[in-house]
Length: 128
Image 1 (tube, rainbow, N blue to C red):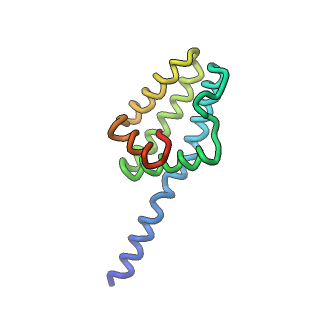
Image 2: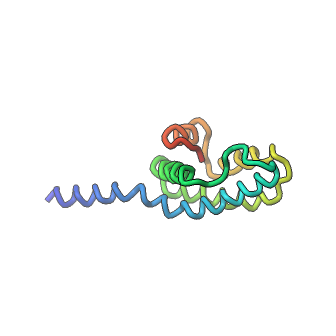
Image 3: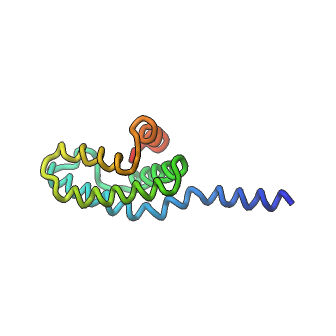
């Protein structure tokens, strides 16, 4: 009786990390738009902003970790905040404005630096 239920629960738990992965293409597209604008304004790639397989894997980890810790709605809210940030990035003209943009994205997503972003960075090697 309990064995089938435990197996079903184990399968559901094992599948959880994959849920956030469906948000990754949207996150990558929005973040790439922000990165492209940042590179245009700054003229270089000072933060290693271009997407690579390593960055994609770390970003997927960060998104999964956000979903694990704060829930699916938080991950969706974060991706929407980054998409909105991409629209705002198109209007930015100075390099320092991008730091403010990141802060506004995190704020719009309800993320706090010490409580949310730092632990995700430690777990995945990249923050949100």
